[in-house]
Amino acid sequence: MSNFKLIFIGVFIAAAVFGLLVFAGIINIGGSSGSSATVSGTVNIWGTVDSRAMSSFVTDFNVHNADIHITYTQKDAATFDSTLVESIAAGSPPDLVLLPNNLVWRFQNKLTHIPFASLPAQTFQTTFVSAANIFTVSDGTLAVPWAADPLVMYYNRDLLQGAGIAQPPADWTVFTDTVSKLTKKTSDLTITSAATAMGTFKNIVHPKDILALLFMESGSSFVTTTNGSLTVDFGPVAGGPKNNAAIAATDFFMAFSNPLKPVYSWNGGQSADRDSFIQSKLAYYFGTASELPIIRAQNPNLNFGIALPPQAQGGTPLTTGSIYGFAIPKSAPNQLLSYTATTILSGAQAQSALATDLETSAALMPVRRDVLAVKPVSDPYLGFLYDATLIQRSWLDPNPIASNQIFSNLISNINSSALSTDQALAKAATELGSLGGQ
Image 1 (tube, one colour):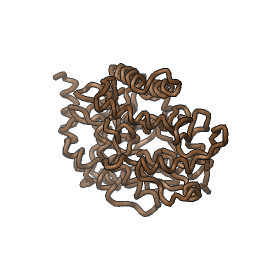
Image 2 (cartoon, one colour):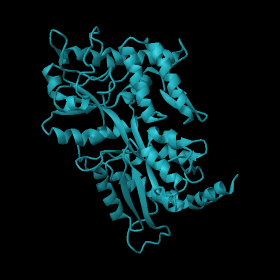
Image 3 (cartoon, one colour):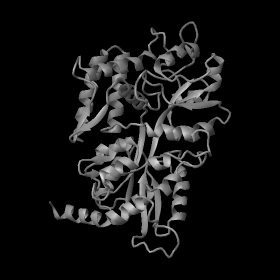
Image 4 (cartoon, helix red, strand yellow):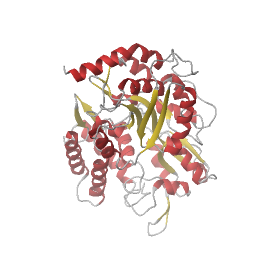
């Protein structure tokens, strides 16, 4: 083992007991200026979450922690990976990175792996929701989980009630039955009011997550890792169970943009799905928890509710979405300070402050099971969003920018009849697999 690795493992083992006690809330490293904590300083964090939404959390954290203070810098999501790579190469990275799950694969070799001696696997599993498992690797943890952003189904109460629908559909069979009641078309099939947005890519905010959900509900794990290698669970094994699940999920998604199908409700000429929902031109919108303040702000009079996305009949309830964790770049200047900060940031006190006010916070959900077990009463949606976080699953995006193009091509190839569904899936699987080496 190299001296470099021995030094880091030594540092983390030395901090293990202290970190776990802070992590569990037994030791409070903050508090009065007379705190006996031996680790102190300012921790600079980079991330892509809106800085305005993060300001409340940062302020609350700094008020309650006298020894460790944090600063947060928002980076452009489109260039975040290249900016971080350049900073690491130049030896001037931030102390912590607020790492989203879609960059886990890209940065696994550029981050300090927190060994199981510091954060045991059992502690990780019993403390955090299942979606956080995406941060674990064979020798430890890439990031300490912090917040989740589950995919949910927003629905327009007025549109549903006007169509005689009392409750949002709980499964996909009921969901498809409501589509014809909610979709309004002219005689030339021009859509004037849509039920749902599926079957296209560019005018849907979360097309990859919707597809991932459908794949998972059909029995495919979508994109994961096996023994350190990227595993794409759709094609090109024709006739295999995973391939059949992928075909069924993709065909279902594509049906809503096919004018020949009874569920035709969407096409590439529609406005972006979230905009349509805000304008009361879309009955169902598949969005994330963090979009709740945006929807409220853009149309305060919109009468809407939130439900889980429809589920497969007889299946285990699930949803997908994003999850964030605090990761330590390998060349971060003070590894012990960075690690200690992660234990506080993911501790019960900081987690409880995450979503206390959905009007001003980032509307990201805590990921600690003990925090999620106590549902707040400050907002009518929070209890539901806590439950959604508990059943959230994550998937491994090998390269978010490159995969966008791959999935866009997948949908385009099927819509244009350039390829059959199984051919398009096989092509997409091969292309996704090729990203595994990046």
